[in-house]
Length: 104
Image (cartoon, rainbow, N blue to C red; front, side, top):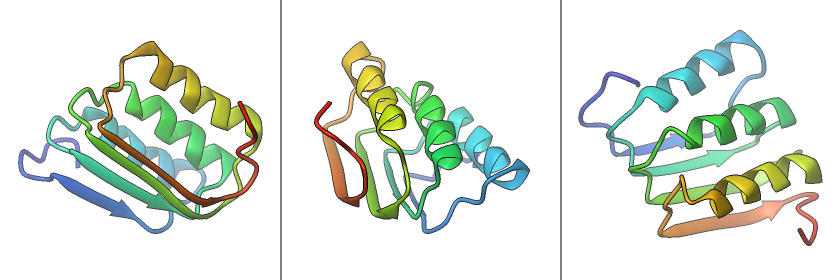
């Protein structure tokens, strides 16, 4: 993932916890070509890893977090902090069918 020059769209239907998920996210963080990411079925661990990777993806334009994600409000606020920082310059953000987002 990290070395691909042609990967523009990445859809992840399940991101495992642990080493397997972290390896995928490390590859995503090194990518310079991904413009759109859609992720479903995240745990807190997976979500935290993805948010950290987003800080390295200045070229990312669209992010969709969809599905029944079991992410707690504190982790959602980490995404908010990242977006407020201006590091991630998304054109579109889709948050559908997510539990526990809260009002922050």
